[in-house]
Image (cartoon, rainbow, N blue to C red; front, side, top):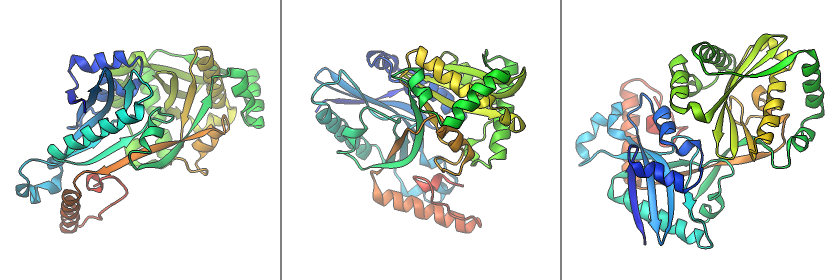
Length: 363
């Protein structure tokens, strides 16, 4: 067995490890973790395992269960606060200096991580894997990974023309017509005016689609996004005859480009300027040498009846699974915490919700 460490976010070795890996992607950056966890008490960490000149790392967050309201009822039963681990976004182990023994290396990494969890009162561990992640296939033979949802993506490796040929026929016609009639894509700077516009359009879209609460973000959230991650972000706006139609944020994630946040003016969607925007970004990403454009899913995950999902699906029939690892390291502690949360809910007249892992984080 090699050496396992947990690095804090300000450790110089965090960035050094990322540099050694080349470009593992935006979701592993300390700047991303600081943005994603703003206003939170969760502690971002890097999990690093080194063995015979090779290494495996991942990024996670430590969540102190003792900060949850129900915990005060049972806190005296614990010698130290229980902790949950969870990915800040799309993560999963990354191998540095990959070779023929990667599976064995990942097995040893998982053994070391399990031992750490056993010794440090880690109750549960949640990993949301990056779509098309390199280590998913190997890890699926080591841990129980679950396909939780699907994302739509465009394969850019054969160039724009090949990608364009895979649009729905109607979409190809609509994109060309929109261009003739005055649709335009503009790359814009994230100044105060443009960020405010994005935040306003995004919030309106979430309200129209009755999105879940965790999709709602205010202006300060988007300001922090650009302050922390400006160099890893592309901001574009779609216009039709010089009138704004949409604003969209793209994440530069290694060889992938992600369409991540977008807001639209509903009555102007019939101009198809939003579809023209997607087409131009597919062209731009192909020219820049990206492998994939990740269009994501709809407002309600991958529901085919979701209008946003249906629109994105018109640009590509390709989907890939988002895998989750939901591992319980201390089953008895988990059951104790779940019961304490259920008892707390009864006393306060609340409904105990269970559609989350672990569910005691739900209000």
